[in-house]
Image (cartoon, rainbow, N blue to C red; front, side, top):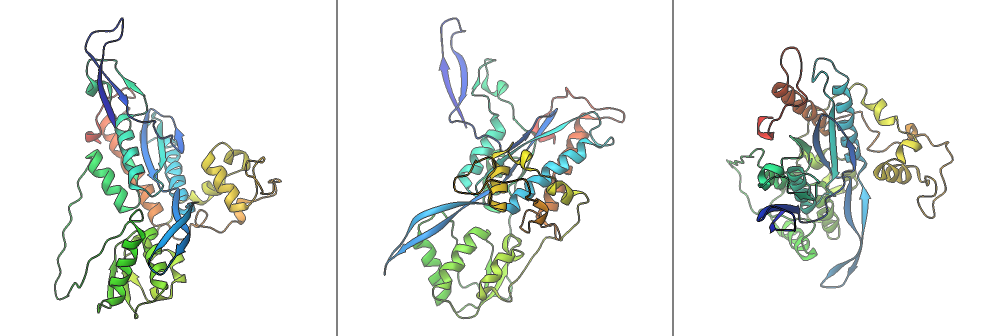
Length: 363
């Protein structure tokens, strides 16, 4: 987001346009410098309602918790791993170092949009080197990976204008009784209304194209007064998530899943994390302390201090789970796709040009 204003300070050219960022830039959760820096955005955190105050007619959120999403931390590590793998190759971007800026969307559309603006504008607070803001404020990254959820991704796509998403639907031989939508920032009364529509409906098949966070809230609301048996058809966002096995009403759910794959070397990369390395990153520190339940050099109150005997290889959580890599493989392939696109713009048969200037549209 840019704020454009005219400034005429002493000693400066009169009527020189100057641009400055409207708000403080978001700090990347993970960063590595390079000749060309690509962007990434994943939902490292998710806000969940932790306690509800319920009466006969209302339900109010008393407090919320912000939980780390270990699965999305794995997506981030996959992007870091892929970038490192590309930088070690001699046939792809030879002599070029690929860097990255990776941000936390917190599973929130406003944060994703803010990061989208930042990818377009960069992090410099002022742009006044020339007499044109458009000349001085070039895109900060040529391309980006993420977000893995459709709602923030569509919002970012519309802001950046990198590509369009055409949508078409055709119904044949079926009757659609209702179509409802819900987002976690909407009032709880909206969630209750959607749940009541499902309970009172005569439809027995539900197509749930929804993020796992919203579906979790909906199923918890439905569990208070379960509807008749339903056949759920799910999107890949939740149909492969084992957490939903705890909801009996989801038994027999079917859906579309991304094919699983194997990424050689990724598991070793994920497990190559020491307490010293974790301390260098607030996000990795949070992961270490919440996973192993110990404090790194007293950084968490009330927890025992890590004594060095902790082994990340003994963990069994979504970060270390690599038996079925689905979205993770998409992150891997997307990072490679960007690298090949940049290679096609700045490299010829023999060498690559570090000083090459190009626009995101060329990638």
